[in-house]
Image 1 (cartoon, helix red, strand yellow):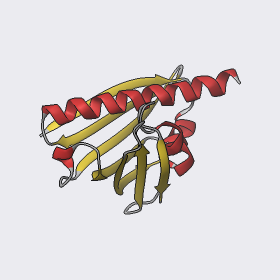
Image 2 (image 1 turned 90 degrees about the vertical axis):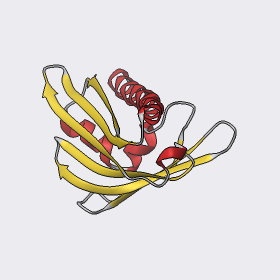
Image 3 (image 1 turned 60 degrees about the vertical axis):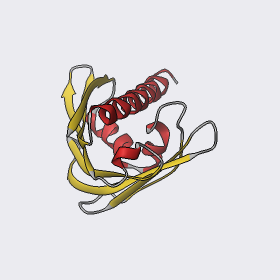
Image 4 (image 1 turned 180 degrees about the horizontal axis):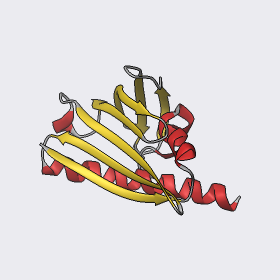
Length: 149
């Protein structure tokens, strides 16, 4: 099993970042790198509530992930199961991994630590790291645009 850990600093309070991480509108705005935009997202933000996110590639193929919220501590932490329903990383299709989003208040806003754990192997971890880095780049841009608007 392999893990991915990424840390980013966001110029917004943890409560605001938390909403972007947990609502369908928030998920639509940042999940997936630029070349994999989200076309649909649902989120029932409660323990054992489900989420589902569908992406579309430039060539029209769709990828979908889903899971369950396992732990919710506002505005500090969200833990969820993660499974590719269609498309995505082929080695992960039958597996359930774990996504953890940790938020910590810092002087300039929020330190976000994303951990995607229990991935199949290092190749899968590298692919997920690429995807999450692209998604977090988009999340940071969204907050930068909000501040300057």
